[in-house]
Image (cartoon, rainbow, N blue to C red):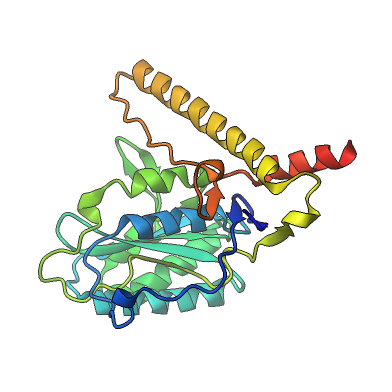
Length: 283
């Protein structure tokens, strides 16, 4: 039986309290091994974090290397130095970063920020990354501080305004498996993503006893809403793919809270929950 709801900026988590749970015996002496690829579980945690970031992530910066060959440890050291410069340039900013590898095996980072795009911030962050990563390269400085023209994509910048659109882009982004595996001989890589402390706020907890109707009934209604929205989204995606002459890859619809026995998360259900509660309390 669910005992409470945890309400995040975008998601609603249905919590079942099982009491203290003993750690499985086979995990008691286990040690974490070296990370070799971007796992599905890590990708799922990433999308949850991006979707529930508050304030929302509204800009993106790309940090690349042009001529320098380096190890994972050196790349992470550069990233942390740049994040320190970011916090000085925009105090209180929230961020989420992802590590990827180019086809030539060189790492680069994508960083999403809660700070709005501005010309001044772009120039300052671009110069900071050049000073940290490749201070002797004028090409590197130009790429991170000036506009450039791509015949296919138009005008490009290393820093731009961003609309996360429910983290859907990140799901597509993480499908590029070739960029998520550690190249042979690269060495220590560490985590593939990270975020600032407090990027996702603590959830609002609603006990089952405080709800206007039984929690199982409310959860069932909310789950049906989530399932219906997913089916509508899949139908729209299929139609767009057909119009553009592309192959449609259907998404696997995960079971919702009313279909599983464990705790479950209802994606993008917060707005619907508040509307349901407002309507029920007004009756």
